[in-house]
Amino acid sequence: MPGLVRRPIVIWLLAALAVPVLLTAVLIPARAGTTEDDLRDQTVAALQARGIESGSVDFDGRDAKIVVPAGVDPDLVREVVGTVEGVRSVRIEGGSTTPTPPPSEPPAEPTVAPFEVGRTDQSIRVQAAVKDQGVKDAIAAEVAKVLGENREYDDRTTIDPANGLTDATAVSTVLQALAIGTGDASVRYDGSTVTLTGEVPDQASKATVARAAAKAVPGGVIANQLEIPAPTTTTVSEPCRTLQTRVSEFNRQHKINFLSGTSIVNDASKPTVVKAAALLKTCPAAFFEVAGHTDNLGSPASSLPLSERRAAEVKAELVRLGVAAGHIHANGYGEAFPIAPNTTATGRIANRRAEIRVLQGN
Image (cartoon, rainbow, N blue to C red):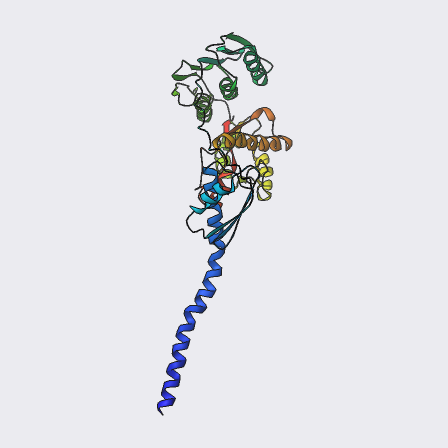
């Protein structure tokens, strides 16, 4: 009898020890994928923070395998990856024994010389001192893009090699925004304050011009004195009257997203662009903005032009689908306006987007 009693006790003890082992065997594989994805994202972010571009980053559990392009110091990569919490070992392939020079300090933000850009129903006016004839010609070319058939160019630019604008960027940015609508409006920068005066057709246009002014003169004080005229009594068609609401609802329900690092609309979003074109064509008189955005994986210097290419790509497709090209303005905002955290893959996908806004409708 004593032997019969002890045997079941031993069996129960062995069973109790086996349960945690089985649970561990089941749970560890389930969490491995998540751990590898998190470590990969953290490692890429750590390398980019040090100005290091890696060929590829792979993880087998907590063991890292990094493929490094020629010219990159593998010892520096190993040191950076070793600081990522959770990484157990680092294997480096490729690279060069020549140490990578430390990233240089970013250049100081250039000072923008004073300028003024104005529009009327008859003309577009640019008043500014520029560095040389090349900048003067570049401004004239930008004016030509937005001039239209019924306006003239009132060129008040002068050449001042010491104090003039070094390029046409600031003027071009403001010109594109002021091209929207009719009537008198101007943007004047006096060296510290950007003053916006005149009339714009609606609140969305007022905000667009203000964003353009802030982009043209980083750090400048914006004095937005633009006015919106009182609504007229003209009859507005039903599709145009409800356009703003319908576009806002469309943006909530449908997303236009891009492949990482490109201006290529992903497959899931291609039908959305077709639906957007059909919606915009319901009110042919309206004006729209396509706003391009990015996640934060690239540098600010590369994110802004990428967002502009994304906006231009969507505009080109909308035009191909029948929306009037002159009624669409494509603008890029880089990584400045995320709608989701950039700390997760899902959030970054959401931030790689284009949005459509109504600028003017009747």
